[in-house]
Image (cartoon, rainbow, N blue to C red; front, side):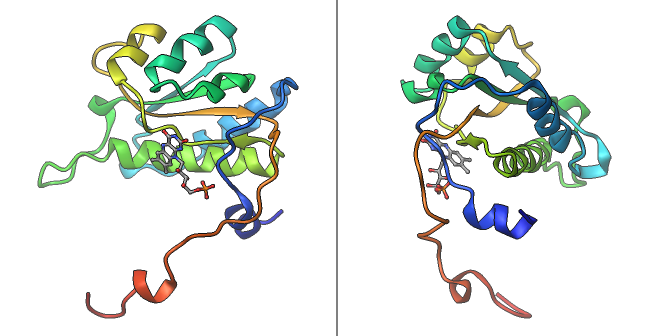
Length: 171
Ligand SMILES: Cc1cc2nc3c(=O)[nH]c(=O)nc-3n(C[C@H](O)[C@H](O)[C@H](O)COP(=O)(O)O)c2cc1C
């Protein structure tokens, strides 16, 4: 599978098999995140791999009861370390951008390895932090379940046409 194939065929998976995810695959997926670019190469991130059943279950209410998340054998929580991240000269902070890039690289690598994920942006941050013992100064950017898909989905659809989202030389 080349990069464009992965981008075209990756879908958000919301049904998971209970087949365990191999350790080597988890390592390779995390390695994809580790190699991601970040502003000024600050790498202001940390990824928590949650496999403990009880902890996964506790995360469900913190994610507005998206209970299907906990069916996956693994949940990955992508965190940012804002104090380590690059800040633009006008004060704009880039930690969320950096972590989002790494998370998407992780997700595409997972897909290449036959594993499903789903970005979870709908969560109560303070609750997630309390459950996982995440320090105050750290921010949670997103979570994703990780596991073998138990649903078949076709390629990506419902995207705006290219003409609507691009322009040349001016807005
Ligand atoms: C930042 C972000 C947050 C998201 N949060 C959620 C979420 O909390 N729950 C959910 O079921 N899907 C969530 N999604 C998945 C989107 O709904 C999904 O990517 C979009 O509908 C396109 O579908 P596809 O991923 O299958 O191509 C999120 C996606 C992104 C990028």
